Length: 562
Image 1: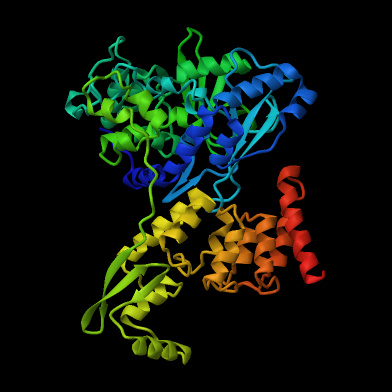
Image 2 (image 1 turned 90 degrees about the vertical axis):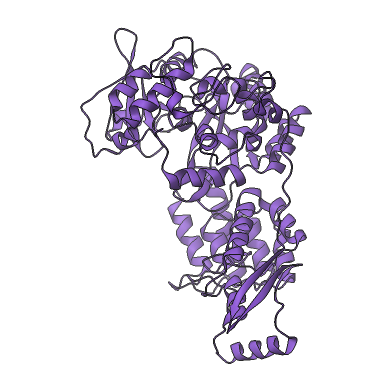
């Protein structure tokens, strides 16, 4: 019934597997139970960029206490679970987003402040978040007000309602938590069964009746829509789900006095939702204009299909793989006797990286074996003499074949990599991107070959921009990763650190390990050139964004004597 686009749902499957590691969930949960919100933020890879004492001095004790209360219920892992994503095959958090977090009831005052989480600036780099305290009413700042149900441990039990159902039943599921056959979906809305509304919506979307579907969801959609409009296309395939927009519009009206709220990301407006004269809710697709752009926004997760339900319905996720707080809310243990009730009480087990693989490779007229583990990739079917002869051939400019060509591809060459090694590489890179230093150290400890390269020829040193512990630079170099290795764009690890979101500490560590800031990439740009260009681009940005860019430029100028 109205299946999501297959590439998108497969990407979400990878996001659910990697983006919030089980180890992070376990550490955040332990810190939360101990009442230590600072430790929870650290475990959730969130940088806290404020001091509560300073908030109290600047904005008053009452506002600081409200902020502290929100920190007390903040579940950083739950927040990360619900953050918007880039998609398109990528698993990273959507960049340059600001999401407001507040449990306050009622109207915000002109001088009120609240927690604001800022997402990364680069797509494939570090997934660290930044938590700040900002004025609630800030002109020319686009923010999404994220409902507490998506980030607060004290409010998460409302997720079943947010997902279009109730504690009694979820859309597409029976009351006992088992899947409901599509043919058994509700055909009329039952006021006593909120899940029926979502099922009727899906039936109508599948039949191509978009306006009627939105009407069943309680939203009067203007039928005068350009069929080529992106928003209309998203509506036709059921990606936009207006269930619960009436309640969210009421919440935002109570907070901001807003009668018109936009659907859309920071850069893409899709529709305007507004209160009609009779108290019902209307909507219309829109294009860009300044008036629309500056209006409040629904958080993306509010108006898009509940991805966890889609993953469960399509057999791409098991209830046991849900975040434990999400699982508790969707499949409460009170449903005695059901499979969902059984798994609801279980917590996620930390996942040890499996790096030992044996790979069959066609080598000449025979099938040979490559074995990965213990920190290396070995062509075990060849003698030491054959390996030495191959190394000499390659040093003289000869081309590798068979086992040796696959090993070269593993270490950054342009050849074809066997499927099991491609899978191992993808798993390792996703773990590093979302798990940072903890994940990289665990992989190396488990026996990952440190000389592994990504699909663009970059080494694990190129991945260090996603890692907090710069001491791992020395560990990689000591393990044989060349500090001067370049990817297929001619970029060294230093180029990537400077140009794609690395920290000043990482730049210093790479320089100390022997990185050369005067080496050019394929466009003949040095790391110093990149730093100077970035400093120019950022000169009018927020001070907190400018500071690390300026520091990197200063470090490189000192190093090169310029």
